[in-house]
Image 1: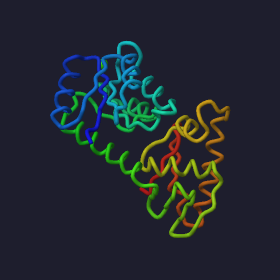
Image 2: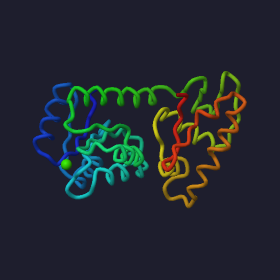
Image 3: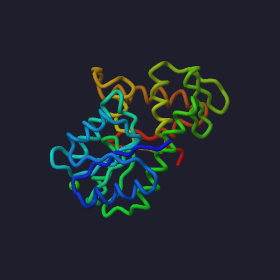
Amino acid sequence: MTKQILIVEDDPAILEMMAFSLSNAGFQVVKADHGKQALQQLQNQRPDLVVIDWGLPDFSGLELVTMIRRDDVLQDLPLIMLTARAEECDKIKGLEHGADDYLIKPVSVQELIARIKAHLRRAQGYQDSKQLSYQGITMDIDAHRVWVDEVSLSLSLTEFRLLKLLLENSEKLLSRERILNHVWGHNATVEDRTVDVHILRLRKALKPFNKERWIKTVRGIGYQLTCH
Ligand code: CA
């Protein structure tokens, strides 16, 4: 099935160049040259992935990323940010707001296509299998069960949701805000500290298997599931 990519970019030359290359690579391309139009396209079309430029005329690419992540329907959409800025703190900011990946301009089209394919494969994998696993941690989503090194683990609903989010995003940085929105919903009135409390409980559950240190605290941002 042809995958649809939404490109949000206000520079017409770059927009056309990317649209042309992605069409040639077999993708169906939808374009937007400002944030509002991107939101309209997201409602009318159902893209499989969105490429978002950092600097847009109406609101910033970061704001757009934040809006998508707060939307119940769109929140899991793979997002790749493009930016002319190369500073490390900007990269962190992009990831912190919920972008899945980050490319610095001028973007190599080959690189962009490779990243798009990787993120689509990843998203497809989650849709196909009802099981998530990472380094000996296995989750059966439908049966609501978790095993660590083949030992069954009993978790509260909140810890289950939290671990599910971590498994779906293994190796990725998850901001506290994103965790809150996913696990508790963005209308919930819970404090940031709530995330830390539940992370602590999850670590405790993983401790007998010596895997508690895999939930890394990334200071000032949030958490990351990684065995590295
Ligand atoms: Ca721009």
